[in-house]
Image (tube, rainbow, N blue to C red; front, side):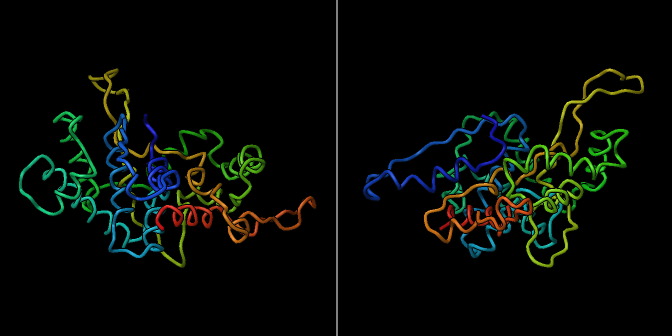
Length: 286
């Protein structure tokens, strides 16, 4: 019920063979997703589409998934990839329930069942996928700045000190694998997962959602209206989902959480949350 992402589904699928003696004993597993905004449901479908893309190497697939999952801004090639997947999902939406017999429709009809959605909700979902196009206007920089100013109010100019306070008060004791520089960079720019020397200047249109607002001016003052914008997390970080814990079946994996200079006051993790997130996805994909 309103999970916000598909990590629980991915882990359940990846680990289901542990409790079966052989492949023939596997039984079908049904997952029911209940998401209030159609934009979040569409984003779940997009994430699943990335995971199921067999044309990409596993490392590139994991990078693309984390980038779309946790970054407010994307690389140009990733934005093009999201647009392509949006078009594919839109075609799948139209083919589901039809009898065109296309291979794409046949494959996705075995994975996704939209029979519980009303026709209006299906239309909304198609609009969501159309908004993944690069022709759709979405100024992430301005929207993120607007969220920051609304959150910090008079403390906006000293917000970087608040990042530092939040990290030491809430994260360091419980999830020190998240490096303070990464956390503060994400709080300021919205970019959590960086891979190599890349430029992230395209808005992540999968984060475009609507929330209920109230008109403050004009003749319609006081009337409720849906407001388009970026309403995602700007405090906790996406590292919580994949980047703070993973399975450690051998000493090499345990090394991900090795800490230098323990009990000296200058402790330093050998690795960081982005590397842990990649290992978590590799465990799902392999």
